[in-house]
Length: 248
Image 1 (cartoon, one colour):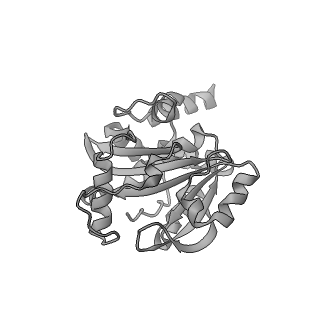
Image 2 (cartoon, rainbow, N blue to C red):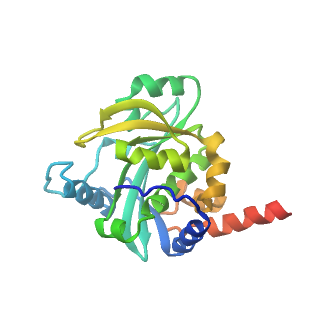
C-alpha cells in the first residue's frame, strides 16, 4: 500500500492517532493457522494489483512464515481486519530473513559483526480501509517500532518500493543501503533501507508518540508466551508515563 507522507507538524496528527488507537487491536497469528484471514488479506491485496498469480486456495504464504524467528500480525479496527505485517528478528544465530536472501552481501556483514535487526515484510492492507484511513501505515508499522524496542535491535530495515522510500526517510530517518532488486514472487523491484534504532528512537517517539508502548503490551505481542487474542495498544498510557517522568 502507499504510505502517506509524514505531516509537517504532528501535534494534532499525533493526538488523532492516539485517539484512533482506542479502536485498534493487534492479533498475533499462530504459525499453525495456515488459512488465517491475514494470509487471505495478503492474497487479495497482491491480486488487486496483479502482483502474484491466481491460486486456488486464495491465500499467500511462503516458507518464511514458518521460520522460528517470524512474527506475523493482523491489525483490526472495530473488530475488522484492516492490515497485516510480519517481521523476522534476525541475529547471528538465526539468520532467516527475506531481505538477507536478496542482499546477502549487505546484510551478512551486519550479522557477522554482532549486530541484529528487524526485517519487516508482507505489509498489506484492505483496499477500502486504506482509502478510509490514510494513517493506516502508522498504525501497522507501530508493531515494528515496538518490536525494535522489545528485541533491542541495532537496525530496523525496510525492503520498499522506490515511491514509498520518502515515507521511511521522513518518519524513521532510514537511509538507503542497496539498489533495487526483486523480492520473491512479487513483480516489482524494492530498495533496501535501514534505520539505526538507538540513534532515531527518542526523536521518533517525541514526534510520533503513538509509536510508544508499555513493556506489558510488548510482552503480550512478542514474548515467549504471547497472547494470541486481540491486544489493545498502550500508547496513551506510555505517553502519559513519559510525560510524568519529565515533570517528576
